[in-house]
Image 1 (cartoon, rainbow, N blue to C red):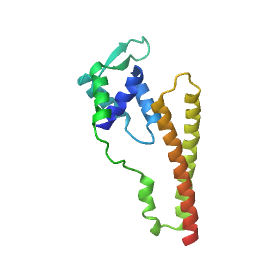
Image 2: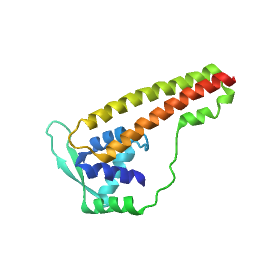
Image 3: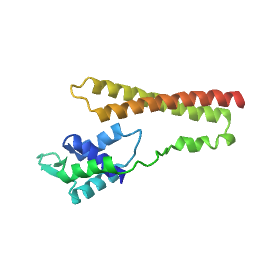
Image 4: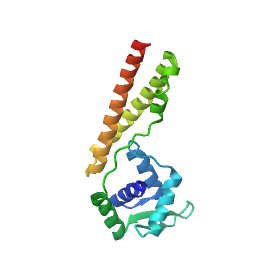
Length: 176
């Protein structure tokens, strides 16, 4: 059900197309939520049926028509109700690499270091992109506090992950 509220939150900022919703979701929520393109569009349809959002159809001639979604009054009330009244559940980490780490005892040091190097490369890339994204938002006249908080979380998360991977490499190389 949290996908619904993530999408309501995106749409609450300003009217957006379905394409924009998917793009914003993948850019801004990468560190704490994941969803597929089809899940997002399915939920948009359900939210419209539940009168939480509505759309304006824009006819584009030679390009495909597009829907611009906006929050209804009911949608805004539901989003606020959820934020204020629903209890927070414990955070969950869902990380495929940590599953791989549980089988390190059956891997060689070379194989483990290769996996750790892949994660380091990935996190370096994500950290760089997230820092650029933060600069982009810092340079905008009107700053969205929610975006700034989550982008800072993403930066700190990547920094922690990088630090942990470097520590893990050193630890593995010392004990094996």
